[in-house]
Image 1 (tube, rainbow, N blue to C red):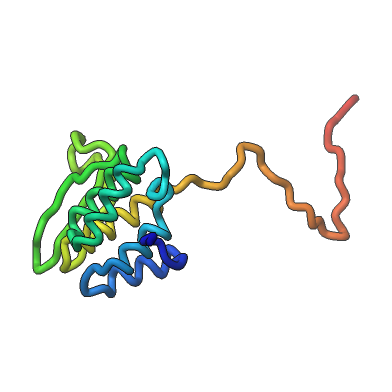
Image 2 (image 1 turned 120 degrees about the horizontal axis):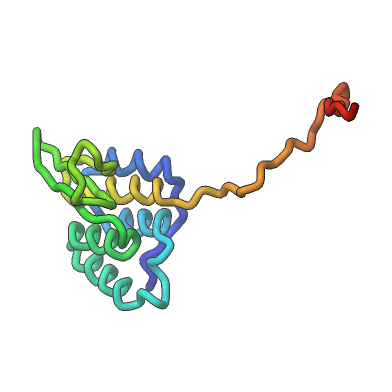
Length: 155
């Protein structure tokens, strides 16, 4: 039985993470389905199986950290802190930089696993490849009054 269920929109996922009281297997599978590209990969079969075992044993924090390790190998946990009854998780590509130079992604929640998952979803959003081409496109719906004019001087 696969853990993957129906597709979630990324904006809805962020709202659900903020509003959630705790992690469930269904909610974590929704996050995996919406954000993960490597999870069901045959190359990562051992890692994917480990994440599934962690989910089924309800080891939410370990499963969230394993997802970061699998999906975002260039990202690392920079900081986990508990302050004002909230967990704060910061993920970074370059942990060795000072805080003021680093462009860390932060997530916060009252639940540790949800804090890590919030940072994970945000890092996945930032890490997503942009669908832009290197060649600029020209709009094809030109106005009927539009007439091209050559402005070069050949004299």
